[in-house]
Image (cartoon, rainbow, N blue to C red; front, side, top):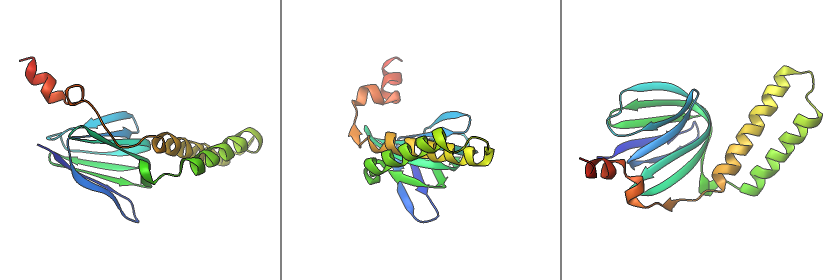
Length: 153
């Protein structure tokens, strides 16, 4: 039985659909969400969101936010979010290079500026990594935990 997943920013609904699993970058590490998960509300970090439906994986880059999990619904309220296919990888790589250059040359003694540039660098790197991914189908037997579990009974 699928779980409803919504990925939302202030500007738009980035994704909405029934999915088999969601994997998100929590502030304390990655979290996997399956149908009937216990209720949860927590913060999300910059990173990759993976949504899996019937062996098809879709990737999203998010810039932090919150996730609310109910047994039949996952809502991701992201500060920013882009689907992999929407990301201009060349532009993201240029942003990463600019942030790396600023880190090397221009933020020696300003902790606030260092934190801002590190955040820019992290966001750019996430966008590059996710942008290089595309939706793809995975082998069902290796991807479907229920299939493996049921065979071992």
